[in-house]
Image (tube, rainbow over all chains, first blue to last red):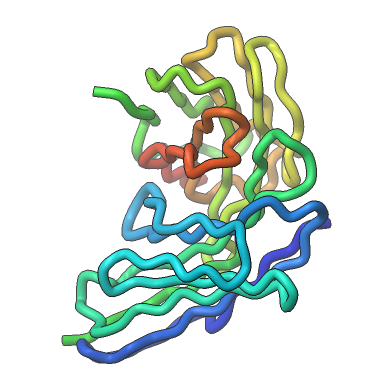
Length: 112
Length: 114
């Protein structure tokens, strides 16, 4: 059974701090790992990672995948209150129908 | 404009009642999914469909049923057999099996049993 574990489950920081969110996984026939941000309703796509060691960046957010250690991190630098959200990690593996297996999510709260 | 429409946004159900959650898309995506989200548990797959008139059980299908009579529509029925139906339900679609970042989520339906 595919499994995704995120840590920490919750995190409280102040504006300007840098945070690192962790995602470890066990999946058969790994295809890709995705990060989403969920504020109130629909998760919004952040990154898709398929290759080890290649950092993806978007503004203050960056992510990298380690396929040997079955691990990914999401970094957010110079956090802002608008970064407060649930961050979801998901993997695609197994069959070709594209099923996503999600982790529990990390609840990030950024105080002014 | 293109997207996924879930309705209603909020739904209250009495115990013992069946309710149906709507999911409509105009993205022309083949695959559609239903996920359930509970606090501290992320999203869990209920049912998915890759083509019209075909669907498969996900990880937590018990107490739920679906249909896929049209490409655009994938309604989810929460039956009285579902013991803990209070949750946030998300519908998603994907192009080409979702191997790219072609997943799109609806805005969700929050179901509460009263």
